[in-house]
Length: 278
Length: 280
Ligand SMILES: Nc1ncnc2c1ncn2[C@@H]1O[C@H](COP(=O)(O)OP(=O)(O)OP(=O)(O)O)[C@@H](O)[C@H]1O
Ligand SMILES: [Mg+2]
Figure 1 (tube, each protein chain N blue to C red):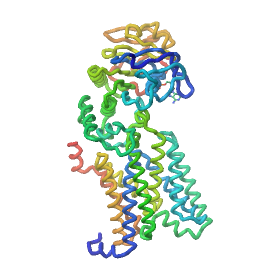
Figure 2 (cartoon, helix red, strand yellow):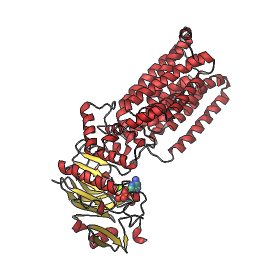
Figure 3 (cartoon, rainbow over the protein chains, first blue to last red):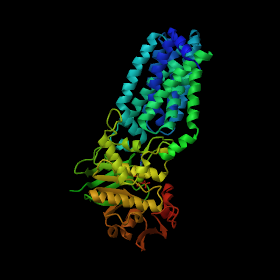
Figure 4 (cartoon, each protein chain N blue to C red):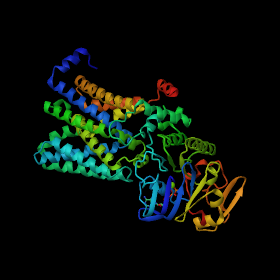
């Protein structure tokens, strides 16, 4: 683990400062949005959105557009479609799975016709946070603000709908609108997260930290804050660890995310007695 | 003025008519036991009162006007209670989410709202559930929590759709007792659906018995008779009174009970409904 001097040395590089800034923004957004994704049991949909975004990004590159817009456009469109499928459609995961495989297939096809993109494709799949430029950071901040503002606007009915769908419907929550808006928000968060850890590892930021937080605390606000804090800590520590070891950043973040979750699942004596006291 | 009035109302879902030409009126403060076999239309009736479905014909009036979705004066405990399997949210947050949960913005609850939640939990003796995550509660404890939440926010009308499911005999009695006490003090009107009259017999004022597309509203003595129930079950029904209990029999089989006919201890008997005992 880096000491204080290496931390300072590390921050002398522009690309490292950019990496910390970009990862910080994406981690907080992912941790907060992911909290609801895990609460709603829709992690699979989040995973699928990443894959669909891959097809969008490669497709955009093929027609000469910036891949990031293809990524955002495709994930948001797919998110809205998944949300529109409704709250409790049986076989929804099967439908998502089929679309997911198809999307990855298309991504491969686009790559096949645009071989020059192959190097960028790896970055897209596994992330390349050490290469983000200041423009990307601004884009991440802008996208993050929009995402969190939208989440804040629907959070109350979203929570009600998540915890008690039948009652929420009876009490006048616009069910379809809220669930669709939420999937669009997830799509934006996936796009953010994919810039850091890549589409294949969005789980590391969007699912690991919230799942860990939900195991550690049962309060709503404490859970959300802990989730964002864990995502931030794992992202930053991951970058520092990569700097110290020369391992890929995304691997380090994924490792820390998994480690955090495993530790939280352990039935430690301290937690047992805390739970017993309520 | 009646709280609920149905005037030649026909109700249906998915292109099927479930209740035809039902007329009845329920007065303020009445405790109505809503009974009837599976598929009789109890849930459909509740959903119509909530304004989630419109009558196919005739009219429904709730508090003197057409029902509208999101009426704060109605407390509701849905029959289908989808619960995510690993919900690590505290009981108190679970309940609080329903307090004006349809509004936009952040789920922050000012002190008065939190106080109401705490008081309702206390009223139903569920304070100890407040801090525990839902995933760690038993089915019956969750049920109690859901009951507390239906009572939240000073409703004038309570629609409780099979709140006794997954409760054992003793907890069934205490739940009925609890609702009875709560509504009597406050003059709340209750529609309480159940599969067996005997669970409610001490608490209810009148029975609304549904079946065969029809409805019968009246006192136990009026409704629980062979002619009325034969019409509702579309079969020859015998009503047997024994030991303060009433049994609805068709060819010697109890049609209100499911498979565990003579076993009172099976609180979860309703979890596996059998549809057509009368033909068995
Ligand atoms: N969404 C739906 N689409 C089509 N038919 C439906 C739908 N929901 C209910 N039904 C039908 O409407 C009828 C009445 O259903 P309802 O749920 O009101 O019965 P119930 O009296 O509540 O029964 P239970 O005791 O099983 O809860 C049933 O025959 C059912 O099959
Ligand atoms: Mg029902």
